[in-house]
Image (cartoon, rainbow, N blue to C red):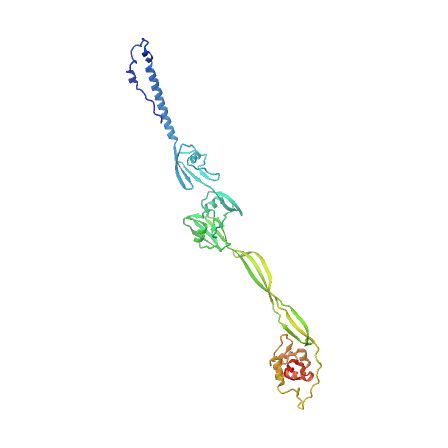
Amino acid sequence: MTEPLPVVPADSAADAPGVHGAPDTTGGPDAQATPAPRRRRAIALLAGGLTLLLAVGGITAASAHKRVSVDLDGTIQSVGTFAGSVAGALEVAGISPGDHDLVVPGPGESLEDGAEIVVRTAEQVSFVVDGEPTELWTIGRTAAEALSDVASSGRTVTMATSRSGDGRPDLDLPLVTDDDVDFAVDGEERTVAMTGTVGLARALEQAGITLGELDAVAVSIGAGGTPLVTVTRISEDEKKTTETVDFTTETRKTGDRYQGESVVVQAGKEGVRTIVTWQRTVDGEVVKEEVRSDEVTTEPVTKIVEVGTKARPAPKPAPARSSSGSGGGSAPAGVWAKLAQCESGGNPGAVSASGTYHGLYQFSVATWNAVGGSGLPSQASAAEQTKRAKILQARSGWGQWPACSSKLGLR
């Protein structure tokens, strides 16, 4: 502040030389000093006025200075300023709010001493609004605050989540600070209290929820304003199913067998068709399915049947019967048991693989009927089968059993 000019007291000026007595008319140097008392009074009055002006100005300046507090995202500083508006105080504090930041009171509001200014800087965060990915500005410092901020507009809002390098779910913001979180997963809902500032991955761990590789996580605000973490179980799997493939039957004619004879020379076998189906399931429900492959993985085996075309030899004359009158009397002793053993292993119920030949002596049904048999030979008694075999041998000879009769030396 400028130091006031010195003021000379009035009584001191009266005692000064040349102030009182007659004017000096000698015309000497003292003649110019005659008006000195008037100049001194003028200077004194001017100095007194200036001192009063400076004192009043100092009082005005002191009254314009203000001390305010500025809260920037929770960090508070005290600011001294002569500014008349909130914007001026922020400038003194070195704060330049962005277009989306919140300032209370507003930057254009007048500034009062002791005012509290709150500034919340906005961040651009990924949301899903009405089903569409959207980047929005929010002043929320947690996902819960940001969702409440955006959801206040009446739109259906969730916060977009992503997976970090280690597969952990992540958000642009922490989930909550010292608050409850609701979880909806596997058809159940539960609430878990969180302590401190907790991210999404940590919140899931505290809730005991393990995510699969494809599981989706959405964060929204529940009806009561509590953040709701919804876990959707997603899986993609390949499913294999098999079907049988029928075999075909091939009939081949051969001159190596007599007419009426048929033999299965190769058994048929069913094949296998393998179908691979890809499925996508969401919370246990199949939402998409497609066939990835459908092919025969095991080829069926064709059944091959040989049918004889060779004409049978003419029947040989029946040998003379013995005086005892027993049929086949020319047969050596025990020959029928040996023949039965050769043809069927001695099994009266034996049936060939082709189903054509039956019983001890492997009769065809037509031949069995021709010698008086009824039904199937394999269903008749051993005695009945031997009786009919003897009749056949008497009519047509041992050639009815070509392989075994030759083996037994009967022809």
